[in-house]
Amino acid sequence: MPSRTSFIDRIESIPQRELYFFALYRLLGAGLIAALVFSPLTELIGAPRHPRLAANVAIAYATLAVALLIWGRKERWLTPIVLFSVSIDIVAATLAAHALPDASAGIAMMLLFNVAAAAMLLRLRYGMALAAVASIAIVLEYLWTQLTGDVAIRSLAELAMFATSYVATAYICHQIGLRARSNQALAERRGAAVANLVEINELIIRRMRTGVIVVDGANRVSMANEAASALIGAGAGQLASGQLDLADAAPELSRRLQYWRNGHPPVETPLQLLPEHPEVLPRFARLLADSDLALVFLDDATVVSRRAESLTLSAMGRFSASLAHEIRNPLTAISYASQLLEESTDISEGDRRLLQIIQQQCQRTNGIVESVLGLARRERANPENLDLAEFVRNFVGEYRSTLSIETDSLEALTGHSPAPALVDPKHLHQLLTALVHNALKYGRIQEEPARVQLRVAVQGRNAVVDVMDHGPGIPEAVVAQLFRPFFTTSEHGTGLGLYIARELCGANQARLEYVSSAHGGACFRVILPGPHSLLPA
Image 1 (cartoon, rainbow, N blue to C red):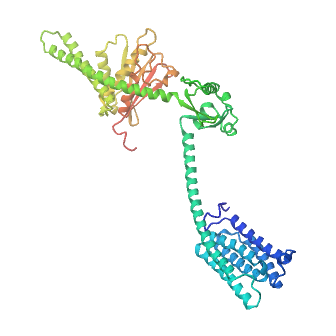
Image 2: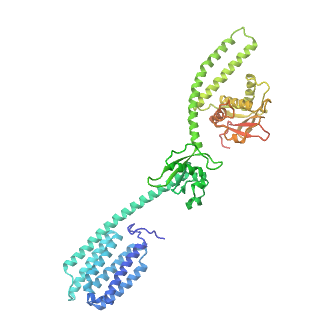
Image 3: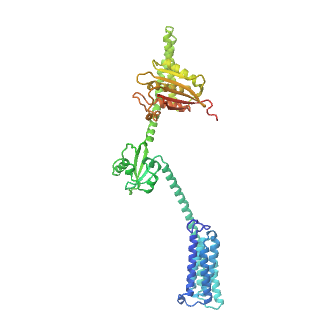
């Protein structure tokens, strides 16, 4: 289907509508000439000078005008159609002016529009050529009148004015057409750019995580993006109909909006629009100064809390780094004093063993300080190839010897096969210490002793260690928040142990997961990359 653009769009692509109107004007001109010949209008201008010529011209021109109206709307044949049709107009106007001398001035004026339209539709050379042909035609008609001895109605001055008008009008109309086409092309380019910007803005608003709702003065939702539709539970059909009442979809949000419209400051507390949906913090803005339309922004409160949490963690990281530097000084003094005591000959073997434990714990604490500093500075881990089974056995032996477990039990289930892993040993030691400490602390039922097991296995190219206890387990409602910083179920806990453990795993390209157990208890699984885990399978 042809594009219905203006006739000033492009020379090679004029739509059928404009050619249709041009053909209608030609039919109107042919009808007027026929009326002057065959109707009582003849008495107004007098009898034709050549009745037969006038009748033949009127019939032929009217027939051709009808044919051009039917056939002459093929826009791909624009140039031939316009050249042929305007040439017929010139010939018909010249013969009609000769046969009807009293109407010759009007016919010449009527021809002026045909020449002007052709100059707008065609290239300059074609338009000027048709104007020249029309000028020559009226001069030839004048000479024909003189040669046949008929009385010339028009003077040479009138002929000169008509000839000049044809040429001048053709040139001016062509320039107007060029300017109009240029403006049309510019308008289309800008319109396309605006349409693209509208689509981009609509896509951005639709895909925004922040909910955006437009509410009119009658409290009806006139527009909402995808995030807002999900938050208020509105379907596409309800939004398209424009009949969704905000009070029905979100009563508390509607109440806050009305409260804000009454001039009160907005309520800063978050609200939950639907069950099992995140809490949102609504913000309101007036769309236009003199309009009742209001914009409602629904910010996800969890995103805001995560930003605040990130800032808090950043501050805690700087504080931890500063605190670690301060710990180093007394730690160095303790380590140096224990070394001096070991050199004494008056110390019993039992006390010497205690000094060795102090020295080991100083080294371990110093390693923890180094890990905290590295985590605060976002330093990369220094992974090494190690046997996870052997590392876990040594860790369990060291933990038993250095910490008082008493009635609690700590057991390593490593088997006899090696479990190669690629991990920073310092980070792994700190990670297992945190997990075992949590298991011994929370993995007990009332006053019963805690039973903790470290099970090592190999899964494909990864090495896995499970820290398992036989306590009451972790409620399902708490599992989703286990690794969040500052989240704890204990009054004396900091809520940073599991978070730091997960960060240490991330620094070593490992994963820390909670695995639910059907037999009770809790299980934290550390999945470590093997030495060849990055190679293609």
